[in-house]
Length: 489
Image (cartoon, rainbow, N blue to C red; front, side):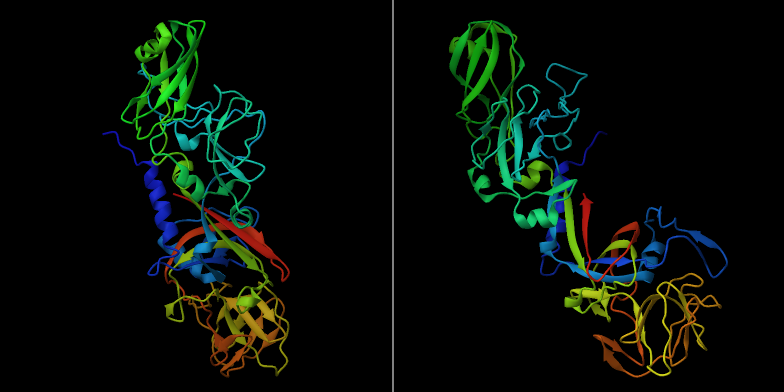
C-alpha cells in the first residue's frame, strides 16, 4: 500500500511549534546549559560503572526515560526562549559564479512523460524540489528563486534588485526575488549552513495565483515553419495564458510567455495550436508548462523554500548579571538542552533566567578555605556528597551539584542525601573546610533558608525535548556564548 507523508506535513509541524512560543496559553521554553563535570566512566553505588565517552569524544545522547531524569542532576542554568528568539530557516546556499543551479519545477520525482522507468530529476540529481538547489542568497543578502537555468547552464551573473517582476540575467537565467535578510536576521539567525526565511509582504501582494511564467522545451520536434509565431494559447484549467513560439531549422528553439494568465494548476501547449499560429507542419514537439506554487511565486516564502527547519538563537552573556547572574563563569559546560514547561519553586517557571545549581552560605568564622571547581565535597554527620561548581569567596557561597554516582552525589550508603545543618563541609582535593551559616537571609539575590538554596529549576518537571552533548566549553565573565539550535521537522 504505497503512501507518503507530504512535505506540507513537515511545514505544518514546524508552524505549530513556532506558534507555541507566542500563544497566550502555550508552552514555556528554556535553553539550559549543564554538565560541569568531565565526561568519562562513573561508578554507581552498586559498584557497576557507566561509560559516557570522554571530553574529546562525548557520546550521542540517549532518548530514554532514565536519561531525562539524569539530565536534571547537573543543569547549571537556563534562559527563557521567546518568540523573538526563533525563526523559520532553510539551508544556506550562497550564489557563486560558474555554478549550475537547479530550476524550480513542480514535477520533480514524477515519471517523465512517455516513460515508465525514469523520473523528473534536477541537474543536481535531486528528485524533490526541496532537495534541489533552486534558490540562492546573494552578496546583497537577497534571496532569489531560480525559475529557469537556461538548460542547465552555468550561472555567471549574480541576480540583483528587489523588483516583483521576473528578473532575467545575461547568462540566460530567470530569477524571482523573494525577500531580503534584515540586519537582525543576519545577526541572530544566519549561520554557515542555514539562513532565515520569511515572506516579503510586497512580493506576496504582487504574486499571481496560477500564473505560468516559464515553458521548457522537452523535445524540439521537427518539420515546422521557421519564424516567430505569436498568440499560441496555453491550455489547461486556467485562463488567458498566451505564449510566443520560435522555430528555427524546423524545430522549436524558444518559447516565451507573453501573458502569464491565472488559475492554472496544470497547463500545456499543443502542437496543433503552434501550427495554427503559423508553425506549419511541426511534429514531435513536447513543451512543459511550469506550474507555480499555490498563490504564485513569493506568496509564502516559508512553504515555497521548504522552511521545515526552525532555528532557536540564544546568547549567554557572561554571568547574565542583568538577569540576577544565574550563569556561572567559573566552570565549563558540556551539555545544551531545550526544556519545556519546567517549574521553579513549585510553580510554572517564568523568570528570564533560572539557576540550576544548589548552594550553601558559608559562615565567615571560622575562616573558610578555598574550594576548587569540580572537586568532591563531603559533609560531616550527614555524609552528604557533591561536586563543586563554583566557590564565591567574596560572598562565601559554595555552589554545587549532586549526581547519582559515587563521589559525585551519592553517599557511602548508596543514597543521595541533601546537605543540611551547620555540619562542616570539606573539599576532598583542596582540603578546604567551611561551616554553613544556618540562618535565613538573601545574599547576591539568592534566598538562603537555614543556610541552603536548592536552585530555581525544579528537578524532573516539564519535558526535555532536545539534548546535545559537547566537548567542554570554557566560560568567562567577558565572554558571550551564542547558541543556534536547528530543529528539523
